[in-house]
Structure formats: C-alpha cells, structure tokens
Amino acid sequence: MNKITYSIVLTLVLSLTFAATTYADTDELRDRESEISDERSQLSEELSEAETELAEVLTELEELNQEIDRINEAREQNEEKLEETEQQIDETQEEADYLENEIEVIQERIDIRQEVLSERLSTLQRNGGNVNYIDVILGSSNFGDFVSRVTTVNKIMDSDKDLVDQQVSDKNEVENKQETLLDRLDELESMEQELVGMNELLEDQKDSSEQKQDELQDKQQELVALQEELEVQDRELASLQEEVRQDIERAEAERVTLASSNSSSSGSSDNGGDVSNTVQSSSSSNVSGNGSMESVIEAGMTQTGTPYVWGGTSPSGFDCSGFLTWAFSQGGLNVQGRSTNDFVHVGTRVSPSEMQRGDLVFFDTYKQDGHIGIYLGNGQFLGAQNSTGVAVANMTSGYWDRNFNGHVRRIQ
Image (cartoon, rainbow, N blue to C red; front, side, top):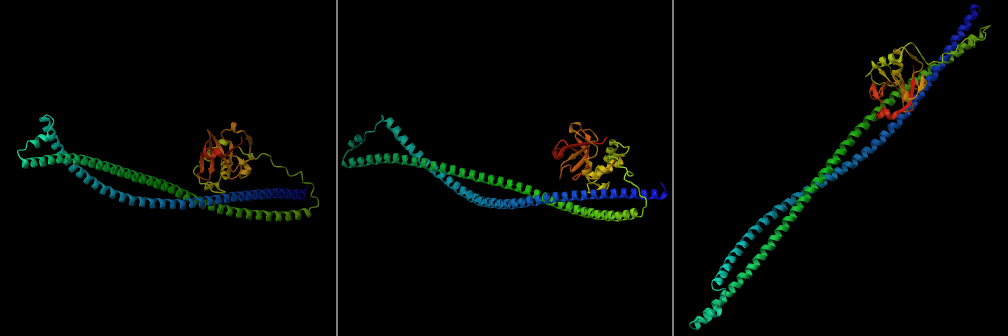
C-alpha cells in the first residue's frame, strides 16, 4: 500500500470513527433529553398534586377556623350563662339561709308547745290520768262562780286544742320548707355540674380544633415548601434541557460538516479500496479497567455528605448516576454511559437473593429504575439521594424498601 492510499484509508477510518462517535453522542443526548422531559412531566404531575392537596388543606383550614369561631362563641355564651347561674346560686343560697333561720324559729315554737303539752300530760298522770271538768263546774259555790268556772274550763279546752292544731301546722310547715330547700339545692347542684361539664366539653373541643389547626398549618408550610422545591427542580431541568438541545444542535451541525468533508475526500480518491473491514467493531464489554468494586466503594465513601445536584458529576455535587460514574472512575473502572438507562445494561443481572457487596441496586422512583446505588451488605446501600446527598441508606424498610424493584447487577 503506497503512502497516498494509506493516508486516504486512515482519513476515512478516522472520519467514520468520529461519525460513529457523533451519532452515538447525539443518540445519548436525545436519550438524555427524553429522560429530562419525562422527569419534567413527572414533576408537573407532582406539582399539580401538591397544588390540589394545598387547596384542600386551605379549604379544611377555613372550615376549621369557622368551627373554632363557633366554639368560641358558644364558650362566651356558656360563660355568660355560668355567671348568671352563679348569681342565681348566690341568691338561692341566701334564700336557703333565710329558710334555715325560719325553720329554726318554727322549731323553737314547736319545742315550747311541746313542753306545755308535756306538762299537761304530766299533770294528767299525777291526777290519775284523767281530769273531770264536770266536777270542777259542779263544785262552784254560787251561780257566778259556776259561770266563771264554765268559762275557765272552755278556755282551757280551747287552748289545748289550739296548741295541738298549731303543733301539727308548724310541723307540716317545717317539713314542706325542708323539702323545698332540699329540692332547690339539688336543682342548683345539677345545674352547676351541667355547666361545668359544658365548659370542659367546649374546652376539649377547642383544644382538639387548635391541635388540628396546628397540624394543618404545618402541612400547609410543607406543601408550600414542596411546591417551591418542585418549581426550582423544574427550572433546573428546563435549563438542563435547553443545554442538551443546544448540544444536540451542535452535534447535528458537526455531523453535517463531517458528512460534507467525507464526501469531498471520497470523491478525490482514485483507489479508495474497500475499507468496510478496516474498522473493527468495539468490544462488547461495557466495563473496563483494572480496578475493583471495593476501590469504587472506598472512593464513593469519601463523598458522603456531598449535596445532591441534578446532572452533577463532581464532588461539588452529584446526582445518582453521576456519583456512580465518578466513583467507578476513581476506583479504576471505566463504565460506558452516564445515565441510569445506561447502567441497567452494565454487568450481569443477578437475583436479589444472591445480592452481595458491590452489586448495583435499582429503585423505581419517578420512573422504572429511576434511582441507583451500590449495595454494601446488611441491607445498606451507598448512593446520591435527593434528600440527603451522598449517604448510606437502609433498603430493608421505609421508602427504599417500598421502591426497591429487585433489579440487581453485578460488575465483577
């Protein structure tokens, strides 16, 4: 092969290699753009859900505020009723004190009459238990004495009868007033207990409503913060999407320029030959290098605490696939690809029951296989998480357990 032919073949080989690379880069960029578009759609759905939930929370808060206003109004009315009742209790207590005094006076009259009647009974007993008023009348010495004695006997009999009647009347009055007093006191005690119970009930309702109000206000703040975070992420994705589109346009322009250059070079050759067998296919392996997964893990552990940055591939900030790409590189292993879509084809798939330290584990987050990390053993994995940055997380419980899809790949 002469120098001219060799030069032409070399030029064609390099051109074809660069073209293949350009096509590959363009396809990767288009995949990346599609991935970003999907993520923006997912963010849009999450933002819409957050807005809907926020609207529901605000409506519930408004209804709760109205309920608290009603409770406060009821409490004010109950306080007024309680003050009125307490005043009535004081007045009734004064009435009860008056009744008590009146009962004492009546009881004193009863006691006095009881002594008189008791004395009469004692006199009767001393005289054989009987007083013969006829003997008294017939023992008069003359008519005037007779009239006087009859009048005296009548007065004594009337007096005894009045004493007995007054005694019965006073006893009935005492019993009635005592019964009235007891009924009134029972009524006041029941009213007081009812008012105290109403106060306690209203206080419990108010405490419960205010606690729920605090919870809803906290939820409102969380949803507002989530909205702001989602809007920030969407702006970042929009910026990244625009950058990818510009990269695609540049790659397309380079491809058109290269095609034009190749056409010109091919037309000027007299003996281009068949170069289809000159370019060898690349290795089917997508992992190369002399490193190990332990060195990859060791490198990755040095970055714990590094913040999560969408599209980040350096210690200033990582996303999940960017972190793995960096860790592989630091650990002496080169992996073709950059996104999680690329990592799903790296190495060999193994069963979750055979999972061992250094395997790649996948999670269904915003999409299938949307998150990736390195299994460390004992249910732990290392990855760049959106909420914590680069950190070790537990995949046997909580969020990561629920989203682990069983996809495991082994590199070595």
